[in-house]
Image 1 (tube, rainbow, N blue to C red):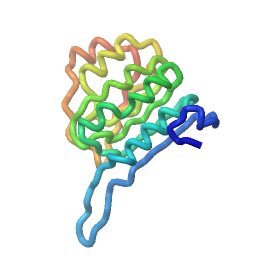
Image 2: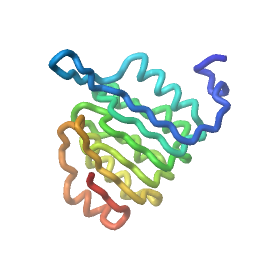
Image 3: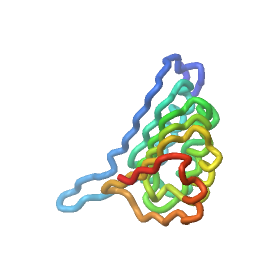
Image 4: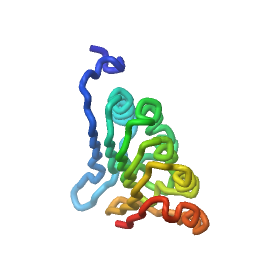
Length: 165
């Protein structure tokens, strides 16, 4: 069976959770590494082949912006009307706005790190009829986040609930 063949995945998998363990203890120091290369390519192909996903969770990839910009391209092309729950925790090391969540037209709940949120993404949700909850979640690996403009938040006021965790 060819792993790149979309017909090769016959299972109706509805939930995928991928967590990259980025904290590597080395003697007296801890090193944080991000994923990329072949692991990232395999993850993208896998997501692109799972045509029945309703829930996707991706945690601690710690990518560079040039890797993150195309992270969910395959997912958007296959799941734009199916995905309902999306978690993107620490997709990048530093601030980088990810626009893909705004392309999932039936997305109800988005959990995302603040460093991956920006004005453009929040504006995309101003026209969304489906988003019910936005969770801005930080953990040990969350990087610097630039604030979203107050007038952007005003535009989406009362459209969905926002939780800070």
